[in-house]
Amino acid sequence: MLNLDLTIWRGSFQLRARADIGAGVTGIFGPSGCGKSTLLALIAGLLRPQRGYIRFGNEALVDTAQALFVPAWRRHMGLVFQDGQLFPHLSVRGNLRYGYRALQPGERRLAFETVTQLLEINSLLERRPAQLSGGERQRVALGRALLYSPRLLLLDEPLASLDQRLKEQILPFLKRIKEETGIPMIFVSHAQAEVDYLADQVIPMTAGRLDPAVPQSG
Amino acid sequence: MWLSPEEWQAVALSARVALCATLVCLPTGIAVAYLLARRRFPGKFLLDALVQMPMVLPPVVPGYLLLLLLGTQGPIGGWLKTHFGIVIAFTWQGAALASATMAFPLMVQPVRLALRMIDGRLEQAASTLGAPPWRVFLTVTLPLATPGIIAGAVLCFTRSLGEFGATMAFVGNIPGVTRTLPLAIYSYTHVPGGDAAAMRLATLSIVLALLALIVSHLISRRAERLLGYRSHAEP
Image (cartoon, rainbow over all chains, first blue to last red; front, side):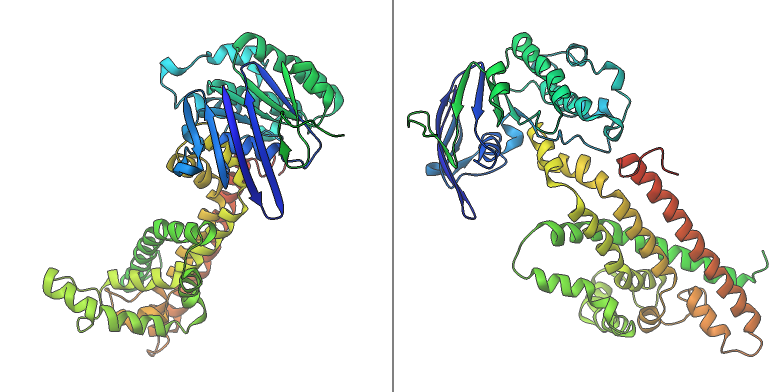
């Protein structure tokens, strides 16, 4: 489904990644600072690799050989950031509808109420992000990405900023999303347990390298 | 009120000039602030210096340069006059332009600062939700910069109300045409028995300036609250 082979340099940091990622939930597991977030930003279209390609199905998203780069807003992929990144000037409802309202009705795979019920955020709709707890904020961020009906959902350590109790509250929601929507997901985390709980396949990542063909050391 | 017709005329003219100057500075100031805050391009330093220039020059100098360029004998002013019959020098529109020139850096600075304070990841989040760059700008960048835009507009308006040197050099001090509030005060201090009128207008200036500060304080507090920079519980 998602094939990539690329290299990016950012200052002294180099990331080389090669992977063929199938449907379902793929967990990318590795220590902090190994380049997991960079990898998701590349897939989402927020960063350009210096060399290489990314293909989604038959569609080329990036191909440096042909100077091809599809910008983030044309990729139709959802990205949930570590700390949610809710728009502070919009209500929860406004946040949830941000990607949703730009879609044609035919492109909307999930109804607004379905998602708010799934994530149990019905009662929060009129609040501002500043009035939400960490766990609520992360659920709204998930809902916002889901309502955009993404072709692929990218989750960048969505639980990292939460304490253990909240993590245990959110994980079942992620599992529900997986089972009830069937949207393919790439879940990035430095916590083995989270990845194991959720992922159908796990790709380990070490400092600046993602390469399932190469045996991992350590 | 207790102002004479001529004094009223000066006040009304000042209000009109300041409003027009602010309306000119708002879109152009936001555009220039955006370029300076977000883009890299050759000659950026020069643009930056040019924008700041009116703040550090004696105000008469920009006014004089405007006269040289836009006066009926000037390259641009002459062209406008022969081809379109438009005259800017020694008109109230010219006063608005002189005010806009002087107030422009005060519009740009707060907006630029506000744009730099915005977390770029919010804009990235918007783009991963399918928003093209113009929609990101209108629905995320601009609303989040609102406190800076309000501060800039208020500064721009009050600076324009007080504009003196550039106005005097470019459009003169013509009663009813270009004699704004500060020019009227200046003129009254130079005629015998004008002290009372000068004092009235000076008092009015102080009141207007205070009002502007209070209004801007209230608006930006409300904006900050709406943006979530300030919680509802805070007084």
